[in-house]
Length: 614
Image (tube, rainbow, N blue to C red):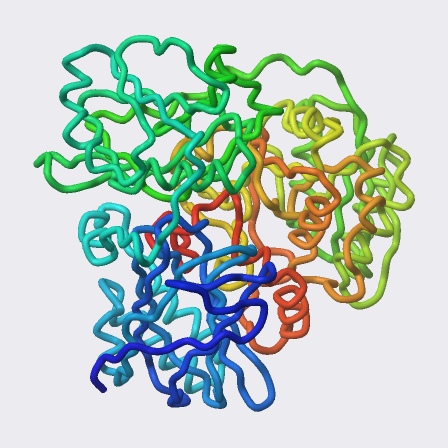
């Protein structure tokens, strides 16, 4: 079928405006004016405004009996592409380009129907394997499994292919489409080290569509509080809309103390681009790594004060590549951890059933390494029947500071953990899977130092597979349509993308396999949801409710443990059957949050277990 533009009609929370749309609520929806072909593959190409806040669009397939949402790649460079298969019962297709009110620009440039063979040509290097898995899932009736295989193949581009990815998605700035001048009182003071650097910068800066700027050398004088000061080097190249994007964010976010954007670098040829740095939103804990990099624009008051307080300042992240550099600064390595300030006391809560091969090594590892904290051990037995297991538990029950509590019945992780939390007598709780083992000293003490912070909710550790590769370094919302872990299988000491696996940092959620939380905060939000999420996603749900209550969740990489993931209950291979109800509830309950994890850039893929381009 030939390519064609698809019109859009305002549906809910949105009205048409000159050159774009006006969102009247937090989640505007538009209807695609096309007649969908159920069961067929489609390729969408769409554009967004380069000054708009960047968000992943949601594509909604409205069927006879149900709806299905897909999270689309964000159009970070102005354009984006999505390829996918329409559900069999689709009747209408909606799209939500934004997650906030206000003016925005969005259009569907191309709508193309593909044959299955045509779609498979886009499956990339893993084509044969993914096509086989996709077809096998279709034959077995595992629709969600098949969709997962297609997303893995179609939704991720390796980071080292950035130049080609960029060239296909780059849209020239169109003032008539993106529109709008900013407040004339907002001025950028662009600072170069010396006159030669200033002269090297001037030709590129003359292309800026935001005209309210000055270029100075050395230290600028008479900086007004409303000004923003931005340091540049001779080799820097700013996108023509860079200052306009920073200004738009400054006007939207009520004069932040600082603004920063994303960046990339010139490749070896000096012509192409490489090394994209798609940064998380502001993370005070992570700030010392220097991940914010450049461009960094300081408001006049912060400039005159010599900087800002990372924990209390208002910092806005413009989720666009605004600057290309010759030599970006490396991400700093974290300093050696300081000595623990104090020993706190926690109850370690371990649910288990008939898995002595897991429970014994888990418990013994707690004694093998000093935890850096005082702790009681509470083993929750979910109906063990093996005689050797029962004998071991009897031995445990006679050990000081150890308690075994019987919790027979169908496995309900949330209910079991909640029951343990209710009888715990310590100010902190540590939920630990029986297939987890400590790897070194002070891990619990380091987690509790964060958990004791009045602003912190849940704290997670760095978890490694038995082979020493990464299993958990924080949870990403929206992965595979729900939530999950990225950067899996990198080395234990790999700092990760932008150093995210080396530094303590804020994350949206952490895994319940090893989760520390202050008891009062846990009960404040109602604990784990034992009714609607007895097994799946209860840990992510808890973290999101803690976030809604005003707490931040933290990943602490200096707490290291090994995790034989899902060893105690088996891997989740039956995505369409066993946990369908929990998946549906979780996705509906947190639909808006799944679209926008503030600590995972929307230009990155949600369809890969490694860091990739969306």
